[in-house]
Image 1 (tube, rainbow, N blue to C red):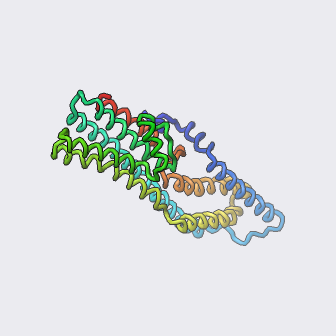
Image 2: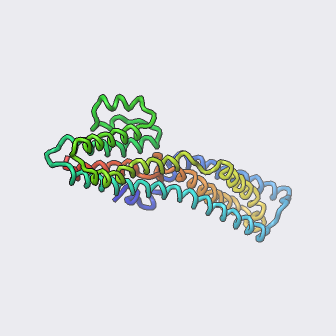
Image 3: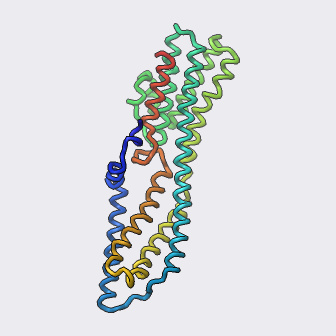
Length: 290
């Protein structure tokens, strides 16, 4: 069971509110609470509120805003789910890759078995860290120290590892260990490594247009500014918790969507790439009997 599955509702909510983003959300909600309190004081002292309860207007604005938020969260989740599918495909095809190599390489060929086990699993960790704009040599500890030092000067570490894996495949083909049909069968599994990196890079480097996110935030702000005017006459002092709760829902949804639209980071709602990478490494080493 993954860490995501182990969390119950209470621990998830605690984690949700412990983050910096949630602290920012609470501050924003507090400002709207203060704003509503000021309007209540003005209403009590001067009996001046330019807007009165208008359910039709409030419902119309709420409907438009909910449609925008649904589209916003769906778009963000599509990106999250596409990233998960890419990494799920990587898990499956690295297993297939390792299984094919196990059947093609002689059992006594410990050298090549160890090479592919180390470099394919290292490719997974390198891709994870590449998506996080990091280079963690400790996670590549199975590789030769000299090669790790060379990787420090490389701009695209997964490319360097992929190139090295394919060079070894070609060397084994030229030496007669792999036959032509072996290479034809191995090539699609090798290609998945590169495809996964490309798909994840497309998600990471093609963000949702900033103007779209700004438009929704402005709409939420305007809605929350107008909402107390529509509620004060009927709800009086209870307008404050109503306004703050509305802000919690609307701004919280927008912030969650902003977080999951780039799912490769270290936030609690991001993909568990560390555990997926560990799983791939464990599977490959077990299949190749290294």
